[in-house]
Length: 76
Image (cartoon, rainbow, N blue to C red; front, top):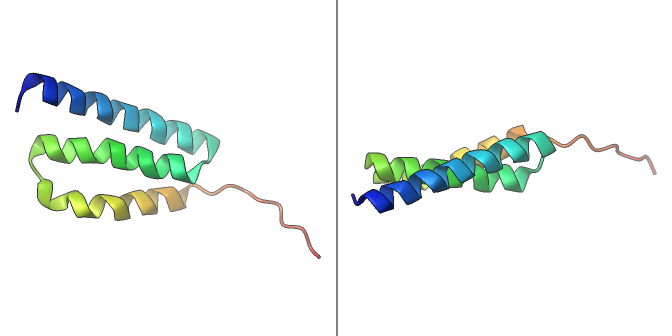
């Protein structure tokens, strides 16, 4: 792989880590979902494990389901 290509993938992975941490702290499921995808996809591309790429979406879904926003339910 070219050095610039690897550098870009590392930057994208770091951005995904930042999005994941920020999404967990603000309890935003969609930000966690995209953050995990953005964090794991470049790692798998760099390591050459392209076979595992379809499983990233399910891992991201599970990670986003862990983050729960406490909602006060009102009784009607």
